[in-house]
Image (tube, rainbow, N blue to C red):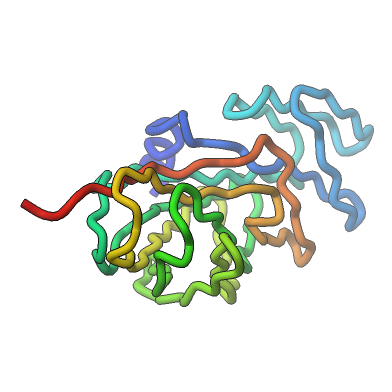
Length: 209
């Protein structure tokens, strides 16, 4: 598992982003701004070397979390196609276990009214139904604990209507820190990084040959 995770971390640097570096000090969660040295005295210090860069952490009570949009098998959609795999995501912590609660993704490039039947399948085969609100789709109730040096992979699927516009380019994205609801030691962690984090694009093409 360790070697697989290392390969994952360096496979696609374009979409990799460290979501948060957190120190727990006396029950208080402290965030470090990117590129800053933070001296907490008895807790030691750490440095974040920019978005998608390396992280140097000193001290046991610390953890960073990253999420990655992985490459899709296909890069096109047909009008009227059903159960289309539109996103792969992987989450992984570092030193401390985290718990994924909810996940919200934004629909970009096509009218959300031309889409339906959103659902997510995780690596265990468990299915979660998506709830659409405007141009966002939310998957709730994971409560999945992810241990250090492990990862958690999910895949998103949906149906497209026959009226979806040919020539459109579609993807899903994480628009802000609250879109990934994770907790650390029972406290919610709000990741502070550059957004949006964009998934792979798919193009809507004409009828099948």
